Length: 296
Image (cartoon, rainbow, N blue to C red; front, side, top):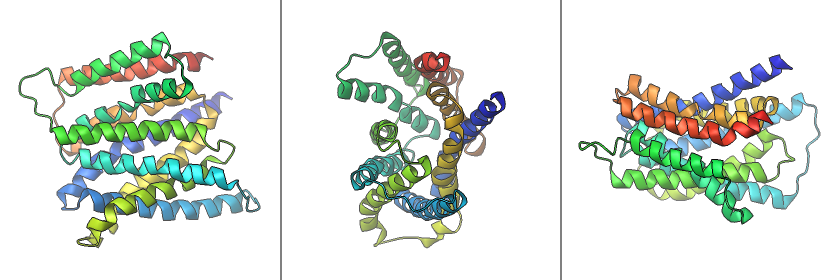
C-alpha cells in the first residue's frame, strides 16, 4: 500500500512538473519567431491525435469492448473542454507580454477563483480556512509579482490575459471533477481535448489562414504537445487514484516553483527574495486549503 502511495506521489509530481516546464518552452518558441496562435494550434492538434492513438491502445490492452457512453455526458465533456482550450490561448497570449514567473503566478489565481465558483454554484459561504487561504494567495500574488517595488512594470494586457486564463483554468478544474466521473480518466481527457481543440481552431484559424509557419510542427509543436497535452493526463490518470484528492492538489502546486526555476535557468528571468516569499505564501495557502482532505 505504501509503495503504491509513493508511486502515486511520484507520478503526480512529475505530471505537475511537466506543466511547469511548459511556459518556458513557449517563450523559447516565441524567440524562434512563432506566434501564440501557431504554438497553441500545433500543441492542441498534435496532443489530440496522440491521445486518440493512446486511447485505442488503452482499450486494446484492457481488452475492453467499445463502450457506448451517454451522448449528453460526451457533449458536456466537449463543452467543458472549451475552457481548457481558452486557458491555453489566454495563458500563451499572457506570457507574450509578461514574464513566465508573473504568468504562472496569475494562473494560480485559479485557486481562489475555484473557491468562488464552488460557493456560487453550491450557494454556500466558503469555510474560514478557505477564506484565509484566498487572502494569503492574494498577498502572495502581490509579493510574487513584485508590485510593491517602484521599478516594476507589468503589462496590463498581459495581466488581463493571465487572469482570464486563470478563470478558464478554474472552470476546467471544477468541470473535470464533476462531469462524467464514471468514465475512465483517459477517455474523459480525450473528449475534453476535442472541445479544447475546437475552440482553439475557431479562435486561431482566421489568423493562421493568412500566415502559418508549419515549422512549428517540427520542434516546438511536439515538445509542447508532449509536456502540456500528452504527458500530464497520463501521469495524473495513473497517479491520482493511488493518493487522495487533497494530497493531489498539494502536489500539483509543484508546477509553480518548477516554472519559476525553469525560467530562471533557461530564460535568465530574475526572481528576488520578496518574489520567492510570495510564491511560498501561495504554496502554503494551497497546502492549508487541502490539509484536511489529506488527513481524512
